[in-house]
Length: 261
Image 1 (spheres, rainbow, N blue to C red):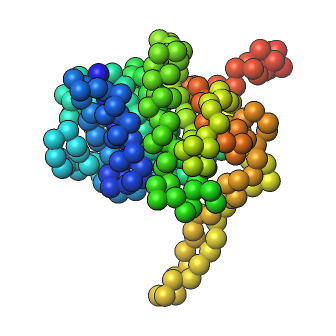
Image 2 (image 1 turned 90 degrees about the vertical axis):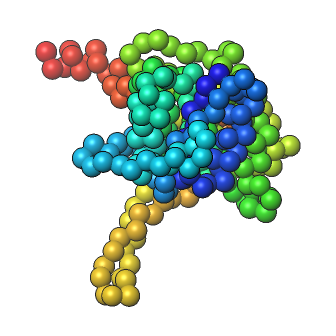
């Protein structure tokens, strides 16, 4: 199996090391693991692509490249330049430092990399490690992902639903903020929504007197609705969420057609 890995935390991120180990075991001794990841951190870029400016790409070592672009850029660079059109069998994106559950999903470059792979017709899984008080003192904060990542990927490859429609399904996996031995299992969960919290801005004055705004996130341990992704993560479970890039509100099409007729 030929596996492409990417992330949004950058080519030197420890989560990419965890993902490399997972991908290497999945690929097997006869397989290939190719890395094309951002040269610098790209957290929060979503499904952005560098449409209006070029990006530099550098070969760091065998099957390992860094690109000055987003995770979606990296997937495109891998397919059409590094691999010269030979699509990989699987794309893994992550392991992100921090959760990509609930509304975080919409901003996530980790998700953007997996989404681009799905749009290119390639099976894809995004993986993120929820962090919290129980992971702060771990020698490896990615312990849950490292301990259970291979099993989750294999389960999805063997038993997951991989559609062949235009907007193919890809998977969003979040590992809970607990040590590996305390992971309770896996739950299929819908994307949740953290109520009463949201991204915002915080103004600051630089040493030169200029006014700048920092994007500020909300509390990450706010529970979502029971059974949804962040809720089951906070209960100690790995969440698996099937996703599509199709943003149509299909449940409203019929009613809206009647009302606008």
